[in-house]
Length: 218
Image (tube, rainbow, N blue to C red):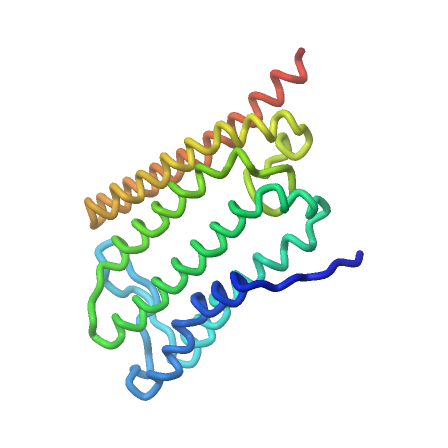
């Protein structure tokens, strides 16, 4: 399989944004403790720790995610369809880069004794991205990399189309729950977000199955 990868400004921007915490960690290396808090519980307290070098390696690997997402489209058998929903795909890549950068910088600042409400920031950031992305779901054409990919959507273009038309509002519901969670905060906010996110993920999957079965019975 032959393909050509065309790099653009968005590729450079998203990579720099996502890698910025790793770059910051290297610049602040001497100021960071030898063991860093790397994971936080619902009440914003650290519950997992990693060595400084392991933490930086983790930040580097996370920073490469936008590039991996970029490359994945070129390995998709239906990669020609990506041109039809390029904006939705780019919004996802930029949003992912920003969330990774926020999470990474939040971790670094926490270990420099600058406390932030990380759960609030992450829930709000993901919620905002889902709200925006939900508006583009109807543009997504069949592929194996991006969108609501179930056995039923991938096997029937009509199921794909209707599921994404239904999934857009569901995704926006999940995004709204993230903004509510950011406002409520704490354990209650996290529960609200996880509940809303669960509904927004499960219902389109169930819808695609029921729609596929209905169409096959006709």
